[in-house]
Length: 287
Image 1: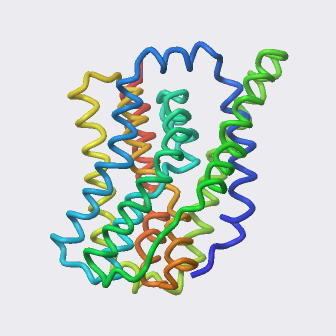
Image 2 (image 1 turned 90 degrees about the vertical axis):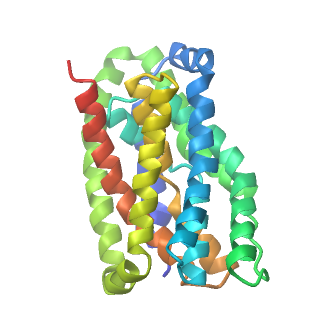
């Protein structure tokens, strides 16, 4: 169950380009606004990196999943927030600055929470002889390279050439939609020969994790009095995860392709939930 070149090389490069375009829509005042409303940021991190892993653990117990699938489900839920969350937030008319802050800060937080939840799941469901160590420097470096740096680049372009930035941003938005569609088709084709086994073993649990995560994100945001844009962004941060990291942990560190099944399936389904939240967010902000 090796990662395809689409994920290893193509996706980071494409995300870099798209994030540069998103940066062209931002200004320093956007981030100042996030800093003045820390409630959304704190709730988003909590929902994505604490509550969702707990939901994954609960589902694994309730559904009495096989050992490897149960461990994989918890690892999937504890993966860092996905790098494409900001793109979906942009398409959904969410709070892009909040999304970028959630991805960046969540990356650092996940370096602690992912090994914690993964090792707990291994001890609870397995025999405890596997240990997970997230590559901290590589993960942080990836976030800096394909999220923060291109956003800063895009903001600099907007400041120096606002006319060009406005034109380029519209083109990159259309490019982003096209890339996401191609990504879904490409990932689906890469696991075509494993569809039946993946769906039967982990499908219901992964669907349940995605649905409950979105529900908790939206409901909690409403209770906290967040705006529709903030609520949509939080829900996206919960439902769009860097599932590739879960697959890497399962295959390279645990030597267990079975543990990699839930993150592989989640990596497919999360784009469907992302587009559903795009439709939700655009409907909520329709004037």
